[in-house]
Amino acid sequence: MWAHLLLALVKKLVAFLEICLANFWRALLCELVVIFCFAYFTFWQYRWSGPFHRQELEAIVTRIRALPLLADEEYELRIADFAQPESLCLCSPAQQTGHRLWAKVSKSKMITVTFETRDGGRAGSSGFAYSDQSLSLQHTSDGDVLDVPVKDRIDDHWWRVHHDGD
Image: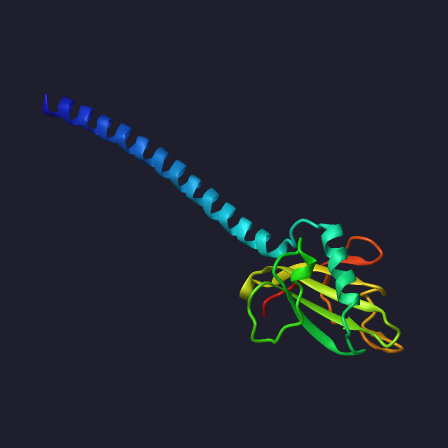
């Protein structure tokens, strides 16, 4: 009789362990999926430049062209909102509000502008770049263009850019 009860108890214990083990693997799989999705989203978020709004960015380039920029000087600018080109300012490096932009005009009046749309700190930053000349050229006959880490080309004047944080 004890053997029969012990056998029934062992069967119940084995069934309970199978359920726990099945739930453990299911829970572990769910946790791994959540961790993977979080890691992928975090990586993707900082590597992706965001949506390309040509009209907004071209309005900013037009506004930068109107500024009295000296040839072969690199300027850091700030803008509160890409949809409001009038919020563009040539600010001191101490100002930390708004999106950062960099501009450089060559002696032949060719302009290069880099827009930072995502700043991931040590994860890097992403954005877009506009240039009157190809960004694959790092040196021209009339001076340097901005050193821009080109990711992929959008068209003749626009590129997606990404700079690794370190």
